[in-house]
Amino acid sequence: MSSRKDCCTAVPQNSDGATFGEEPVIRLREAMGVAGLEAFSRHQKVGRSARRAAYGVAVALGRCRLFGVKVPPDLEGVLPGAVATAAAEWGCHVMREFGKVAKVLDKTFDDDAAEGEEDALQCLEVRMDIWAAKKAIEEAYEAEQVQSRVATRLTPLANAFRIFLEAAVVFDGILQRNTESLAVASETSLLENWRQALAQGSLGVTPWWLDGTLESKAAKIAKLVRADKAEDLAAALGVPPNP
Picture 1 (tube, rainbow, N blue to C red):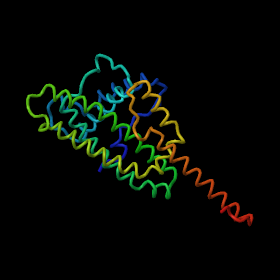
Picture 2 (cartoon, one colour; picture 1 turned 60 degrees about the vertical axis):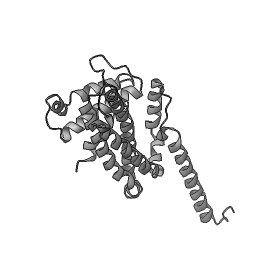
Picture 3 (cartoon, rainbow, N blue to C red; picture 1 turned 135 degrees about the vertical axis):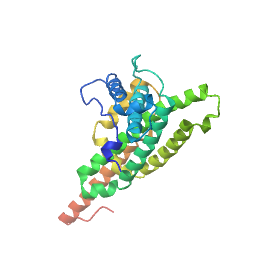
Picture 4 (spheres, rainbow, N blue to C red; picture 1 turned 135 degrees about the horizontal axis):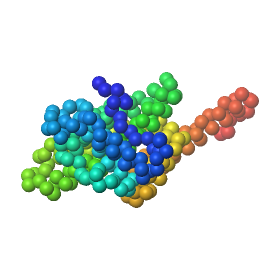
Protein backbone atom coordinates (compact mmCIF):
# COMPACT_ATOMS: atom_id res chain seq x y z
CA MET A 1 0.00 0.00 0.00
CA SER A 2 1.33 3.42 -0.88
CA SER A 3 1.81 6.15 1.67
CA ARG A 4 -0.53 9.12 1.91
CA LYS A 5 2.17 11.33 0.42
CA ASP A 6 2.47 8.92 -2.50
CA CYS A 7 -1.28 9.06 -3.10
CA CYS A 8 -1.72 12.79 -2.84
CA THR A 9 -0.70 15.42 -5.37
CA ALA A 10 -2.31 18.34 -3.58
CA VAL A 11 -1.17 21.72 -4.85
CA PRO A 12 -0.47 24.27 -2.12
CA GLN A 13 -1.74 27.77 -2.72
CA ASN A 14 0.91 30.44 -3.25
CA SER A 15 3.46 28.36 -1.36
CA ASP A 16 6.35 29.84 -3.34
CA GLY A 17 5.06 33.36 -3.71
CA ALA A 18 3.56 32.79 -7.15
CA THR A 19 0.27 34.41 -8.00
CA PHE A 20 -2.85 32.33 -8.54
CA GLY A 21 -2.40 32.83 -12.28
CA GLU A 22 1.22 31.70 -12.29
CA GLU A 23 1.12 28.78 -9.89
CA PRO A 24 -1.23 26.40 -11.74
CA VAL A 25 0.90 26.77 -14.87
CA ILE A 26 4.08 26.13 -12.90
CA ARG A 27 2.52 23.01 -11.42
CA LEU A 28 1.31 21.86 -14.84
CA ARG A 29 4.76 22.26 -16.35
CA GLU A 30 6.27 20.30 -13.46
CA ALA A 31 3.64 17.56 -13.81
CA MET A 32 4.27 17.27 -17.55
CA GLY A 33 7.94 16.57 -16.86
CA VAL A 34 7.44 13.61 -14.52
CA ALA A 35 9.28 10.52 -15.72
CA GLY A 36 6.28 8.24 -15.28
CA LEU A 37 4.60 9.78 -18.31
CA GLU A 38 7.17 8.17 -20.62
CA ALA A 39 5.19 4.94 -20.43
CA PHE A 40 2.46 6.54 -22.56
CA SER A 41 4.70 7.98 -25.28
CA ARG A 42 6.62 4.71 -25.50
CA HIS A 43 3.45 2.59 -25.41
CA GLN A 44 4.75 0.66 -22.41
CA LYS A 45 2.75 -1.08 -19.72
CA VAL A 46 0.94 1.47 -17.57
CA GLY A 47 1.96 0.82 -13.97
CA ARG A 48 1.56 2.68 -10.68
CA SER A 49 4.10 5.39 -11.45
CA ALA A 50 2.48 6.10 -14.81
CA ARG A 51 -1.00 6.30 -13.29
CA ARG A 52 0.20 8.59 -10.55
CA ALA A 53 1.97 10.82 -13.08
CA ALA A 54 -1.15 10.94 -15.25
CA TYR A 55 -3.24 11.94 -12.25
CA GLY A 56 -0.78 14.70 -11.44
CA VAL A 57 -1.16 16.13 -14.94
CA ALA A 58 -4.96 15.89 -14.75
CA VAL A 59 -5.00 17.73 -11.41
CA ALA A 60 -2.66 20.46 -12.63
CA LEU A 61 -4.53 20.97 -15.92
CA GLY A 62 -7.88 20.85 -14.14
CA ARG A 63 -6.79 23.55 -11.70
CA CYS A 64 -5.97 25.79 -14.64
CA ARG A 65 -9.49 25.21 -15.92
CA LEU A 66 -11.14 25.78 -12.52
CA PHE A 67 -9.17 28.92 -11.78
CA GLY A 68 -9.53 30.41 -15.26
CA VAL A 69 -5.79 30.38 -15.89
CA LYS A 70 -4.59 30.68 -19.48
CA VAL A 71 -2.42 27.69 -20.36
CA PRO A 72 0.62 28.42 -22.56
CA PRO A 73 0.42 27.03 -26.10
CA ASP A 74 3.15 24.46 -25.46
CA LEU A 75 1.11 22.98 -22.60
CA GLU A 76 -2.43 23.51 -23.84
CA GLY A 77 -4.50 20.59 -25.02
CA VAL A 78 -6.77 17.74 -24.04
CA LEU A 79 -5.42 14.72 -22.20
CA PRO A 80 -4.87 11.72 -24.48
CA GLY A 81 -7.36 8.95 -23.79
CA ALA A 82 -4.81 6.62 -22.24
CA VAL A 83 -3.53 9.35 -19.91
CA ALA A 84 -7.05 10.34 -18.87
CA THR A 85 -7.93 6.70 -18.22
CA ALA A 86 -4.87 6.21 -16.02
CA ALA A 87 -5.61 9.46 -14.20
CA ALA A 88 -9.14 8.31 -13.42
CA GLU A 89 -7.85 4.98 -12.15
CA TRP A 90 -5.31 6.63 -9.84
CA GLY A 91 -7.93 9.10 -8.69
CA CYS A 92 -10.06 6.17 -7.52
CA HIS A 93 -7.07 4.82 -5.63
CA VAL A 94 -6.53 8.19 -3.95
CA MET A 95 -10.19 8.40 -2.92
CA ARG A 96 -10.12 4.90 -1.45
CA GLU A 97 -7.03 5.69 0.61
CA PHE A 98 -8.22 9.04 1.88
CA GLY A 99 -11.70 7.69 2.48
CA LYS A 100 -10.06 5.48 5.09
CA VAL A 101 -8.35 8.52 6.60
CA ALA A 102 -11.60 10.50 6.69
CA LYS A 103 -13.53 7.72 8.40
CA VAL A 104 -11.30 7.88 11.48
CA LEU A 105 -10.78 11.64 11.72
CA ASP A 106 -12.67 11.86 15.01
CA LYS A 107 -10.41 9.24 16.58
CA THR A 108 -7.32 10.86 15.11
CA PHE A 109 -8.30 14.21 16.64
CA ASP A 110 -8.85 12.51 20.01
CA ASP A 111 -5.43 10.85 19.87
CA ASP A 112 -3.47 13.79 18.45
CA ALA A 113 -5.13 17.10 17.60
CA ALA A 114 -2.24 18.26 15.39
CA GLU A 115 -2.31 15.06 13.35
CA GLY A 116 -6.09 15.26 13.12
CA GLU A 117 -5.90 18.77 11.72
CA GLU A 118 -3.25 17.74 9.21
CA ASP A 119 -5.33 14.78 8.04
CA ALA A 120 -8.50 16.88 7.79
CA LEU A 121 -6.83 19.54 5.68
CA GLN A 122 -5.23 16.91 3.47
CA CYS A 123 -8.62 15.26 2.89
CA LEU A 124 -9.95 18.61 1.65
CA GLU A 125 -6.88 19.12 -0.52
CA VAL A 126 -7.55 15.72 -2.05
CA ARG A 127 -11.19 16.58 -2.67
CA MET A 128 -10.13 19.75 -4.47
CA ASP A 129 -7.66 17.73 -6.53
CA ILE A 130 -10.40 15.27 -7.45
CA TRP A 131 -12.60 18.11 -8.68
CA ALA A 132 -9.73 19.46 -10.76
CA ALA A 133 -8.89 16.03 -12.16
CA LYS A 134 -12.54 15.53 -13.09
CA LYS A 135 -12.45 18.69 -15.25
CA ALA A 136 -9.47 17.43 -17.25
CA ILE A 137 -10.70 13.84 -17.52
CA GLU A 138 -14.15 15.02 -18.58
CA GLU A 139 -12.59 17.09 -21.37
CA ALA A 140 -10.85 13.99 -22.67
CA TYR A 141 -14.03 11.94 -22.40
CA GLU A 142 -16.05 14.53 -24.31
CA ALA A 143 -13.36 14.75 -27.00
CA GLU A 144 -13.47 10.98 -27.34
CA GLN A 145 -17.23 11.09 -27.76
CA VAL A 146 -16.88 13.53 -30.63
CA GLN A 147 -14.05 11.70 -32.37
CA SER A 148 -14.93 8.07 -31.79
CA ARG A 149 -17.02 6.06 -34.22
CA VAL A 150 -17.71 3.31 -31.68
CA ALA A 151 -19.99 3.38 -28.68
CA THR A 152 -17.92 5.42 -26.21
CA ARG A 153 -19.53 3.73 -23.25
CA LEU A 154 -17.47 0.66 -24.19
CA THR A 155 -14.07 2.39 -24.21
CA PRO A 156 -11.54 2.11 -21.36
CA LEU A 157 -11.83 5.84 -20.72
CA ALA A 158 -15.61 5.77 -20.53
CA ASN A 159 -15.53 2.90 -18.07
CA ALA A 160 -12.77 4.45 -15.95
CA PHE A 161 -14.54 7.82 -15.87
CA ARG A 162 -17.81 6.20 -14.80
CA ILE A 163 -16.08 4.41 -11.92
CA PHE A 164 -14.26 7.64 -11.01
CA LEU A 165 -17.55 9.55 -10.75
CA GLU A 166 -19.11 6.81 -8.64
CA ALA A 167 -16.07 6.82 -6.34
CA ALA A 168 -16.37 10.60 -5.96
CA VAL A 169 -19.96 10.23 -4.74
CA VAL A 170 -18.84 7.68 -2.13
CA PHE A 171 -15.90 9.87 -1.08
CA ASP A 172 -18.16 12.89 -0.71
CA GLY A 173 -20.50 10.88 1.48
CA ILE A 174 -17.64 9.94 3.81
CA LEU A 175 -16.37 13.52 3.99
CA GLN A 176 -19.80 14.99 4.59
CA ARG A 177 -20.34 12.63 7.51
CA ASN A 178 -17.19 14.08 9.06
CA THR A 179 -17.73 17.81 8.63
CA GLU A 180 -17.16 18.42 12.34
CA SER A 181 -13.56 17.35 11.87
CA LEU A 182 -13.17 19.05 8.50
CA ALA A 183 -14.47 22.32 9.98
CA VAL A 184 -10.96 22.95 11.31
CA ALA A 185 -10.18 24.26 7.81
CA SER A 186 -12.23 27.37 8.61
CA GLU A 187 -9.44 28.39 10.98
CA THR A 188 -6.94 28.49 8.11
CA SER A 189 -6.70 30.47 4.87
CA LEU A 190 -7.23 27.36 2.74
CA LEU A 191 -10.93 27.76 1.97
CA GLU A 192 -10.72 31.49 1.29
CA ASN A 193 -7.72 31.01 -0.99
CA TRP A 194 -9.71 28.54 -3.06
CA ARG A 195 -12.70 30.88 -3.22
CA GLN A 196 -10.52 33.70 -4.48
CA ALA A 197 -8.96 31.49 -7.13
CA LEU A 198 -12.35 30.17 -8.25
CA ALA A 199 -13.71 33.71 -8.48
CA GLN A 200 -11.05 34.42 -11.08
CA GLY A 201 -12.24 31.38 -13.02
CA SER A 202 -15.83 32.67 -13.00
CA LEU A 203 -17.32 29.17 -13.24
CA GLY A 204 -20.25 30.10 -11.04
CA VAL A 205 -19.98 26.71 -9.32
CA THR A 206 -19.49 26.35 -5.57
CA PRO A 207 -18.77 22.85 -4.23
CA TRP A 208 -20.15 21.86 -0.84
CA TRP A 209 -16.84 22.31 0.98
CA LEU A 210 -16.74 25.97 -0.12
CA ASP A 211 -20.43 26.90 0.27
CA GLY A 212 -20.18 27.85 3.94
CA THR A 213 -20.99 24.39 5.29
CA LEU A 214 -17.68 24.02 7.11
CA GLU A 215 -17.76 27.55 8.54
CA SER A 216 -21.29 26.98 9.79
CA LYS A 217 -20.26 23.73 11.43
CA ALA A 218 -17.27 25.45 13.05
CA ALA A 219 -19.53 28.19 14.43
CA LYS A 220 -21.89 25.61 15.96
CA ILE A 221 -18.97 23.79 17.55
CA ALA A 222 -17.60 27.05 18.99
CA LYS A 223 -21.03 27.86 20.44
CA LEU A 224 -21.24 24.46 22.11
CA VAL A 225 -17.75 24.86 23.53
CA ARG A 226 -18.64 28.27 24.96
CA ALA A 227 -21.80 26.81 26.50
CA ASP A 228 -19.85 23.96 28.06
CA LYS A 229 -17.30 26.38 29.51
CA ALA A 230 -20.08 28.56 30.92
CA GLU A 231 -21.66 25.54 32.63
CA ASP A 232 -18.30 24.48 34.07
CA LEU A 233 -17.70 27.99 35.40
CA ALA A 234 -21.18 28.17 36.92
CA ALA A 235 -20.65 24.82 38.64
CA ALA A 236 -17.30 25.98 40.01
CA LEU A 237 -18.90 29.15 41.43
CA GLY A 238 -21.92 27.29 42.78
CA VAL A 239 -24.27 29.19 40.49
CA PRO A 240 -27.36 27.30 39.30
CA PRO A 241 -27.19 26.71 35.51
CA ASN A 242 -29.59 28.54 33.24
CA PRO A 243 -32.78 26.54 32.63
